[in-house]
Length: 334
Image 1 (tube, one colour):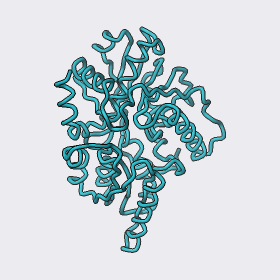
Image 2 (cartoon, rainbow, N blue to C red):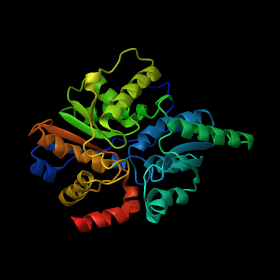
Image 3 (cartoon, rainbow, N blue to C red):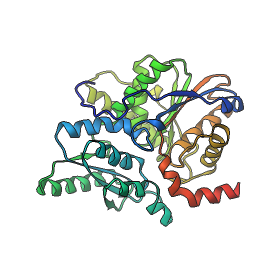
Image 4 (cartoon, rainbow, N blue to C red):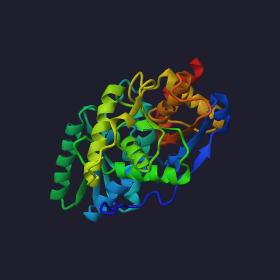
């Protein structure tokens, strides 16, 4: 991967730690990959992805990055923080993906952090139009060029080279260097870059277990197609002719409801279970829905009792504060 420049944001391995209380409760040997500690303040998986986007931006001598995400996107906040580390301006484009959210959601959490980081914010009306969002960013990038800036667009849609997936290919190699004995690895599956990169790194490292992607935005049918596309695009990016077998793609969407960025019973139970048993926090959008996968698959037999399971904690904790209204209500109800 030396042909793809890397701006180092995660210089060291993130730890893999035992979850002793939950292991006893669930009847498996459960561990956590602490990628919530990766990168800049509030950390997370996006730091690994941004190493390659910012590497490309710096190689092109960019002075400005532009990126799209949901209002409470961890990706755009991490991009703004990481860009600041390298002296770059950031323009973030926020999409309205989550319906019926209050003023706290619109101003707290990652939105507040974006403001503190000095990011300029613009908005895009349609949270399901990835190509349109990319086009809007590229139009803004042209405006920046006319002003004398050198912009770099971090794209959203599937048709773009999945540079960010290279970060999780490295993470797969990292996990195997730390502990290669897991039977199941569970990770978020949204844009697909983290999931596809991790799967590729593990498969190419001869990992024989299952990698389960928990849906956070689309149902299992749509997400399976997306992961297949990202896997193929990643191999093309790397100049590899071999294909990751489709039978290695495992997707679960049992905690997705009621939809992206919305908290259902499974996610809420996961938040409480992790906090009360291990003193660790999960975010409502990604990691709560990912952790909810594990007890569900243990219950239906897909994860066997006494097997070794790794939960990849991808961070995103700043968004907890934006969900205070929903979380407070759900805590009272339960």
